[in-house]
Length: 228
Image (tube, rainbow, N blue to C red):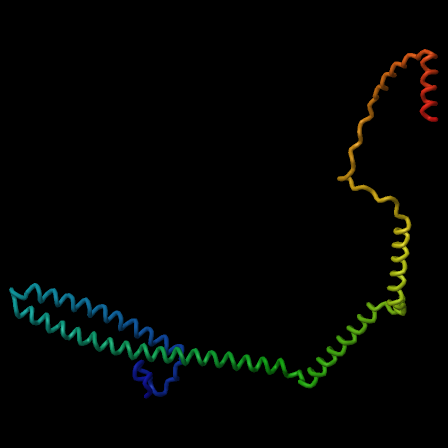
């Protein structure tokens, strides 16, 4: 008889339980032992209280209470060991159950992947990728050909156009130099315009009174004498 059969009372001819069923039974056993622990702990507290109560009044009753406490403590210690063993066994079964589920899932995934690749051939896939790359190259060449304006004056010499442009610029410059007028005075150096005002003409000076004819003759004589 197996270990599980000894624990759970299985007969040899009975069908082995599944891992999940064994884990469930171990959990139920743990719960039962934990309840047994609680019961024993309460009994131990009661016996200690009895021993204290009768320690001075009835020594025999106090001693009997302490003996029962010792037995309960021993049972409690045994249950602790049993719980540790069951817990380790349950964890091992849970790990095995998890591994089984994982392996089963991985096996199913492998089968699905194999079925998906069943109608695929690696060489055909490589050929298809080569065809895709080739068509992409063709599409790129077509785009380049369309975007290149070959039939729209691409044969014109760019250097000749540059020279012609320079000549036109030089002609314009010569015209500007020949047609340059008087140099304008900058606005900030211009003298402001003087407002027009009517200036009165100066009054005429009074004429000198005509000297007598005799005086003029005397003067002329003196001038002629000086000149001679």
